[in-house]
Image 1 (tube, rainbow, N blue to C red):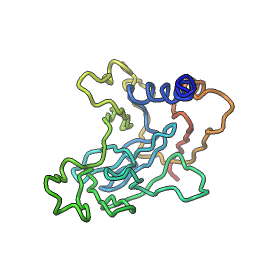
Image 2: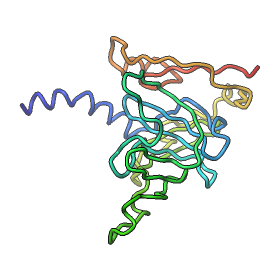
Image 3: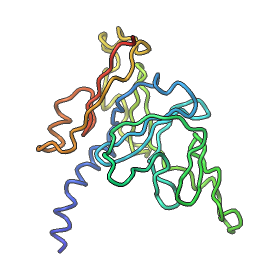
Image 4: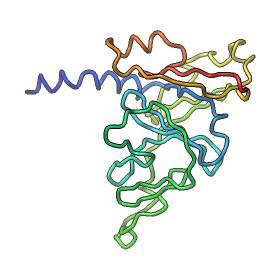
Length: 212
């Protein structure tokens, strides 16, 4: 029934409002993406995307879905495998294993087998779906699915957060990723977790440790 459909959709609508219209922190600084093609694959409350150092040298973010049939372009989950909240890797080409579409680290479509001869097919119109990216002064990455001109700005959402003295004293080059644990099966609403962690996602907690 329509009411039943709406009821089942409410949790999804809540997640979409939270993660689509606000800058969401990724649990790592750009120092971990120090080479072209290095990426972090992230799952935020079922919204899977990756952040990558592009060939152009900047940091970009894309949904982990091929523009053709939405198959994951980076490491699709194997049957029975437990989801991992954050994964790392390095690629020179982003390739979809379903129909062989491939993309550059800039997100541009590089190859689409069987589509070259189709009249009107423009590869430039079929790149990976991107997210808006903000890198703060401490090198941490934030993403937002809202790319409209009136999207919520960094200053409006976080104010002077990146200017905190305690953050200025940290040299992130001397730290490395230590561990993470997920809370997907936690017996409470995801918003409780978001409200109670400073470095967080809806289902992820990460720790950093000094090198050595």
